[in-house]
Length: 291
Image (cartoon, rainbow, N blue to C red):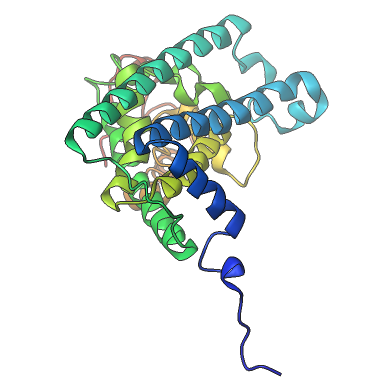
């Protein structure tokens, strides 16, 4: 018996499979790095944002009993058809703006010769992809958490973030239902900055972007799938001042995971509503100043 197993190069756990490598080499020979970055990123957006949105939002019609069983909030609280159509309009505008800005940045990078991501002739090894994904996930959590909390500041909330919170019972499409400033600051930059800091390969960035798009549509879906991710963000849309992050680490660290609110209610004999009122939140007044 051999003391260790040896894989042929195409099956090595440290490199992407040979067919993917060949496909990537063909793409690199056929298109410029700028075209690859722009078109590839647009394709990822179309597949991994609109795909999950279509699936989640069709469950009501295709599987009504299943949908009703897994909906976090009851039917009377669900958005109306006109609200969903308005949401669709806002999301399309945001994506047009972000795509145009991306195209402009790529054009500038072709003039300066400095691209935002590595577009190498070969796919990066798996261990590099995993490393960059882990660090990008942690960096994105920090960027999203703190930008999200800033958007809840009394001076910013009414003008910018209040738009997103119109959906107290969110749907998947509402993940990008936001003011254009919020779309850039909280939705785009926390995803694009970490891979750029790490000098990640564009292929790694696409994987990270795909994961984040699936994650954000899932937590806004209004369904109780995938542990408590959607439930936590649903509570944020309902209660406003808890669960600002995506993975919960910084919410735990800063006490915005609901534990402070529960402790205060318990100390007041279980009486709710004495901390922050709906009217205060709508006006952009922050009631809980303990953190």
